[in-house]
Image: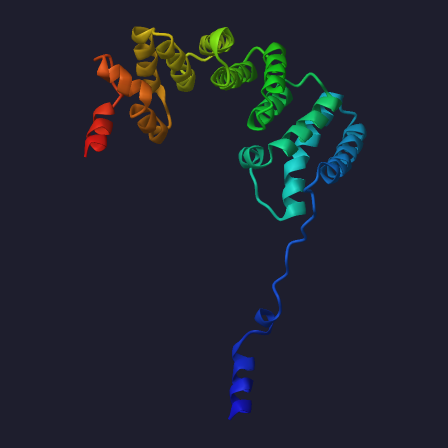
Length: 257
């Protein structure tokens, strides 16, 4: 009886399902040394391709960056996008952009990306330096992004500071948000950032105007909804100055339940 059952199972289950599923080969890139060696391999390949096509260093640098993330995903069995990679592995992202900058230092995007990676690593002084270089190298889209990221870093520095130093960081961030808006007048998040600084420095009417513009333009409705119940909206509402879009009443009702 047992022999009959075993024979039936053998014929009912496909042979390939009995074999262990193949596992993706995973390469250890956990240490800076291993990751540096990995980048060296990609750089050599990019250099060879660029030389074959007689491309300048700027094109070689772009080719190197295009190859890094797909190679990382293949080596580690991952499926990360650049956004998720920058958040999960900012140290590795910074290493990639450092390598790219060593090939061609004139890339505004590479300095912007490395500055953003440094921000995620809380290496704020280096972030400001890279973002300043990026803004100097570009006069369009990259400059606007660099200005916005630099403003965020300066706001983080302000929160760690006090007195005159805090005021100086906030003043620089305020100028960055303003310059960003001069380039991109419909950037909702710069209105929010500038509005926060205006609120903190007692410019309530101007803060309300910036927040109104933020709610008008913000493409992320879930984030806008979060801001609508935030501290600035609550305090403006308490002074009867809340712009359209703020909904602190719901917050107060929930708090008082």
